[in-house]
Amino acid sequence: MTRIRFHQELDELKHRILAMAGMAEQAIDLSVQAYSQRDLALCQRVLNNEAAINRAEREVDEFAIDLLAMQQPMAIDLRFILAVIKINADLERVGDQAVNIAQRVMNMIELAPADLPVDIPAMAGRVRAMIRDALRSFIEGNPDLAKHVLAADDEIDRINKEAFTSLSNCMQSKPDCAVQALDALSIARNLERVADHATNIAEDVIFWVRGADVRHGAGQTLAGS
Image (cartoon, rainbow, N blue to C red; front, top):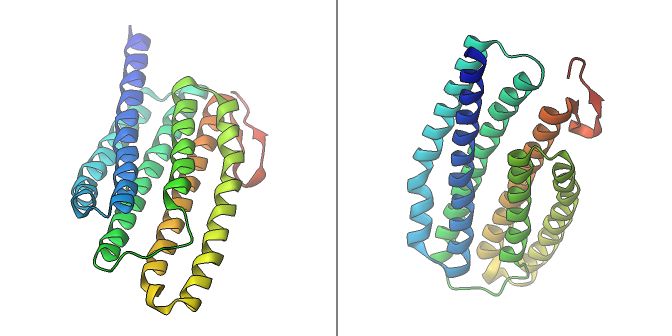
């Protein structure tokens, strides 16, 4: 009976982290919509929702730590709880990046629209796909899908570098667009960081399922998995 209760609590932990993931995803979606629509109200929604994301992070951490202390899980169950704690932190930081984007958009709205040489919505679409795939790999316990997320990060890095080059050139050739270009550059950097968090989540899924630490190109399988 105790074992059954423990697995029910693991299911509850998974439910809570997925609810947290939904909040973080929504924050990114709203911030990018705010950019596309130059919508101050959407920016404000992102800022207002930050407290709820922070509260959810604390609640997930407390639940996970209680499970570690009271149940003393071993092997794959232990790795699952540790992975959830790390994923929880990354999701909270995704929310932080959404707030950063919203604040930059608020700056841009105060200025006249500028034709900038960067496609933020397209970049955001790729980043959101990474987040979705990382979370789906967690839901399904699918390390192969998680590896797909790791590979996708290189493309986001490339797009961010191209944005840096094109926006830097824009600031030099069109000084009147410099502030807008700088804000767009910051938004691209925020999206690149969201992709990094998606990569971290994917790495944690591989650690949970296979007991392998693939951070920084490593691939060591843990004993007792």
